Length: 331
Image 1 (spheres, helix red, strand yellow):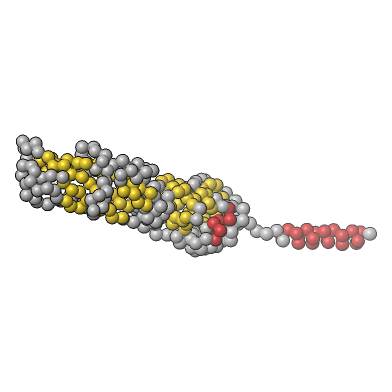
Image 2 (spheres, rainbow, N blue to C red; image 1 turned 120 degrees about the horizontal axis):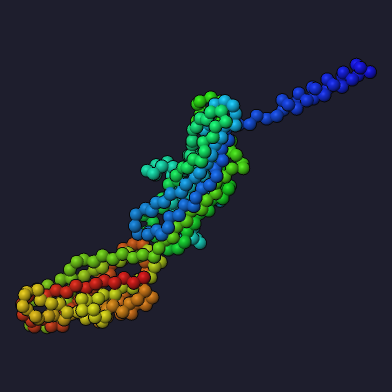
C-alpha cells in the first residue's frame, strides 16, 4: 500500500513541475499610451502658405522586475482604411486636403508605422531601474497642411484615426542598453485621435496702381484708357467685384480733382467693364448678387479683369487730375 501511495505522489509532483515550466515569460517593461489630443488646424487659407498645428501623446512605462531593464518603445500611426500616407489626406465629401504628420518641428521625419505605410514610427529608448516608472511622458506630434493647394474646395475636412490605425509595441531586455528595434504589437494598447481643418472661402485682389488716361489738349471732347485687376479666390467660390470712386458713387461715376494748389477744376469720368464702353462698372455688387459689378468664380488661380475709363470732358485748366478708386471683392 505504501509503495502505491509513493508513486501517486511522485506523479503529482512531476505534473506540477511541468505546469510551472510552461508559464510564458512576460516583458519586464510595459507601456501604455494614455491619450492623444485632437489635431486641429482650425481655419486654413488655401491661397496662403502651409498651416501647422500640434497634438500631444501621453504615455507611461513601468518596469515590473527587480532589476534594471531597457526597452525600445514604438508608437505607430498608419492611415484610416489603408489609404495613402505621403501625403495623408483629409476628406470633405469627395474633396481632399493634403497634410502630413511629423515627429519633429522641422518637418523632416514622418510619423509613420512599423506595420503599414511609411516605416518610421516614433521610437523611444528608455532604461528603468527595478520597479521604476516613467510617470506621464508627453510627446508632441507636429501636423502640417501642405501649401500649394490653391484648388482646395472650401469646407470642413477630417481624418479620423481609430484603434486599428494606431499601435504601441515594446521590445524589453535586461540591462542598461535598449535594443533599438521595435517589438511586436500590443493588441490592447492604442491612441485614437482625430485630425480636422476648415478650408475658408477667401479672395485676394491686386491692381496696377495707375489707370493713365494720358496727356490731352485742354478742351478735348473725351479720352479713355484701361487697367487690369487680378482676383484670386478659393476654388468654387463665387465672387462679385465692385468699383467705388472717392466720391462714393455706386454708379461708376467718379471725379478727378486737380493737384495744383488753388485749381478747383475737376474732370468727370465713368468706369466700364467692356472695351465698347457700354457697360458701366459700379459698386452695387454684394456677396450674393452682381449688381452693376463683374461676376466670377474662383479656381484658386489669379484671374485678370480689365477696367475701362472715359472722361466726359477735358475743358479744364491744364493740370494733373487724379482720383482713387477702391476695388471691392464680395464673396
